[in-house]
Structures are given as C-alpha cells and as structure tokens.
Length: 232
Image: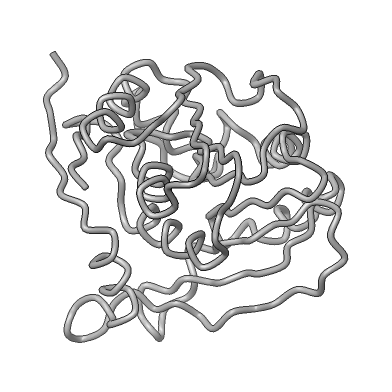
C-alpha cells in the first residue's frame, strides 16, 4: 500500500500497524467505521484485506481528511470519509464494526505546541467517556470494535465500557521490550455481550535483532510504503 503523509504532522507509527494486525484476527465484517482516520492507514489496510466490507471513516482535521481521501483513491479502495467531529457523527446503531487509534495521551503528559499534532495525540480532544459512549451508540446491537490506548488508562477504559454497554472480550498489552512495562493496550469490544475477558499473551515489539518475528510479520503483511509530503 502506498500512503502519503503530512511532513511535520502526525504520521502513523507502530501503534497503527499493530492495531491493524490485532483487528484482522477478529475478521471485521459488514459496515466498518475508522474513527480518527488520520492519513487513513488502519481503515484502508482493513479495507484492502477484507474487500467485502463497506468502509467509512471520520476525521476532524481537514488536512488529514484530504490525505485520507487521496490515499483511498491511489490504492483503489472504496471509501466514504465524513469530515467532522466523531462525537457529532449521527447514524446511531448503523455500524457492525468500529476501529480506532484515537488521541490517547492524557493531560499530564508534556504536550506538543503544534496544533495539528496536539489534536491528533491528546485525549483532551476526545475524552474516554464520550469516546466509548459514542462507539456504543453507533454500533448495532451485536456490533464490535477494536481500539488501542494508553495502557496506564486501562482501568478507566474498562469502567467506561461497562457503563456504556460494551464488554471488553479480548485484550493484549504491548511492550517495547520483554523487560519493559506496557505502554499500549489493544482491546476487542462487543456490544451487549456477556463473554468473559480473554487476556492474550503480551506482544513484545523489539528484541536484540530489531522487530520481533511476530511484529515483523504484521509489518510484512501490511506492506506499507510511506511518502511524506510538505504542507503547502
């Protein structure tokens, strides 16, 4: 996949690639919404690998929305992008699947002064409770979602999910190295589910050789070639 990105803006990182791999294991179906699409990477990879889905996305920042549209066109993926605030997206109860790598850095983290990066990174722009509540409203009664988030806020996420009718059914913690604490967590959610929580083995991204084999395999499957474009 060829992906154009904003030079000097928020660019996709390992989080997005891992979320794509995590989501793929649950075989997304039907009508799928990518929340906070950015340049489109997560949704477009899923659309490429699961061509029978109907792919939509929502992106608040106009510049990212334009890049996502271009990337969809360049890669020949049918794509409907809604430009605006996710919390104002209105077709409630209409999605089978939602996937999101949202802004998740909390307010105590040192913040970027770049306004484009600020909106893309920090959850002051999309707090946990409204974010999770909106996912629940947009999903069909048996809908599913996959998200990644700051591992330090896992407890708040689980509490918010339970209050809004979402059940965390699968969770995987990501560690940069085997002896490092987890900084990222990926969650598979189901609406109106009574399933027990399944804790997947930790995912370690790096070893002494570079990416671990399991992470390298996800990158190899993604096959993304990125080109950064200056803002003009």
